[in-house]
Amino acid sequence: MRASRQSSPYVLMGVLALLIAGAIVLSLVTAPPIARQELQSAARNTTAARSFVLDYKALTFEAATSPASRAEKPVETGAAAVKFQYQAPDRILQVRNESGLVVSILIIGRNSYERIGSQPWSELPGSSTETSEGVQVAGEVLSILHPMADATAVDRRGSTYRFTPSRKDPLLENLFGTEASMLSKISFSAVLGGGLVRDEAISATGAGTHFELSFKFRLIGTAPPLVAPARSRG
Image (tube, rainbow, N blue to C red; front, side, top):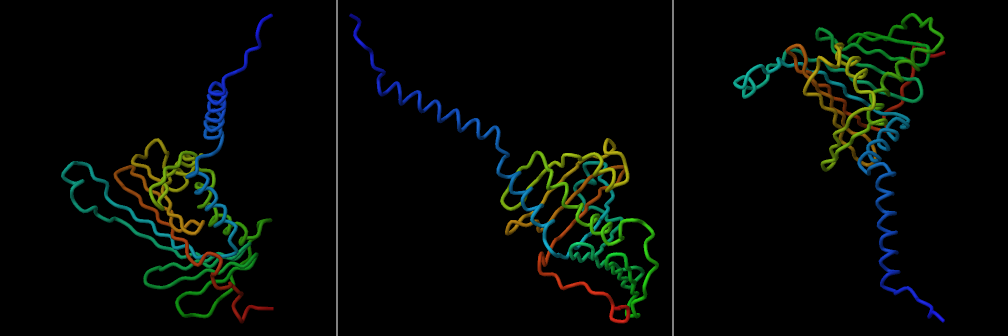
């Protein structure tokens, strides 16, 4: 009669260890990396905020063409800045400087108003499109968060996240007005804080010009309410 054989407790411990290790490896492979989760979550949280102020700045520089020019301070060739104030779901205030005058555009649903300098607000002709202008413009402002919400490769260094949007080429062509294949030195980065997007920066070089776009989010969820000008209220 053959004696029964019992498995050694050390063998069982070894098999259990292998199973646990395999489960850990599988979870790391199937679960999104932490940095990508943090970036995507912050983008979604900011998109869902009831309000925020967005300071947008676009700078252009003469691209360095030689080792000597790369060592010199870049020559700025253009600059533009616009402040957006967003209030969900369809209210936008846009403020920009034109030839020394502050031009403000306020959009509330289907109604739009303009003020130049300290002049009184004047109502602009309404949009004839089926979707209200407020919804359209709000969507354009929120779209700057989309590249982070669907980012693929994400690398974190402190509070700064460098990322690659899932639809990088169409985004670059829309932002810079040129084919993505003509651009180089492309960079996407964001700074997070408190589970929200605080800064986003996009840069690229093409056709002898270096572009730098900056988007700074502030007063997230606490921006002042946007209301129709007093003389225009019904």
